[in-house]
Length: 270
Image (cartoon, rainbow, N blue to C red; front, side, top):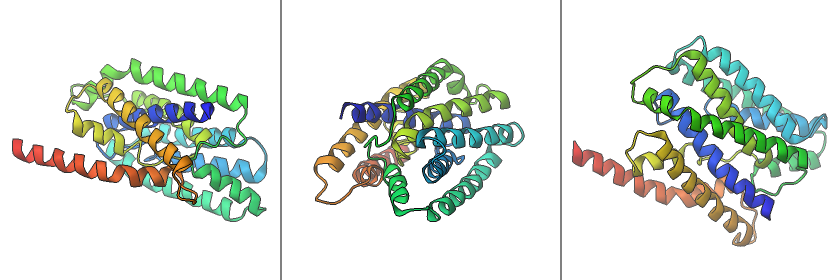
């Protein structure tokens, strides 16, 4: 239980912070940690590791996500931000298709079930070793430290005061990958929180300082994940409730209210 709560905390911080960095890098509210195929790569690596037994699910997830990030790194050096978004969508679809092929050709139903239970992101920690935890915590610490150190440049870049070089953008992408992998490789992919929560933060608070949104988004992310975790564990109505799906259902009314309110305020100012 304590380990599950630790990863509720880590995921609630890592994914919104990574999503915010993507939005500031791209100057686009549709920026998301999964936009460049990082989530699909994590699933492909986890599937390959599970079906082959060559390594632990966590290691497989990290290796595949790293390869995906390196590909995106070199693409980032060559293309514009707008084209990078398009590439990311297409690349993510390609990686996701590979993952589907691997899973549908699982050698046994038990291995397929193991993979899908990981993908449900229910913080069950099945098959997670002490080494996996240590590795995940190191990735989280490095990724979060970089996010805090680079906040000034990201805020100025978002405000068009400066333009980050391609190499800086690529480095930021690598550090975002560390944050994403620290959570996803252990718990599975968790939707909404890396895209919806940063946008909610920016609707609530108009500050352009990314540190402000780090705090607001982390608090919201942890709160949403904790409520969802408790609902899926104790108020599940006798059915299996995946974290990602349950959180999206819980968060949708709140999101709608805040976005409607934010839109109304903008129209009033106009």
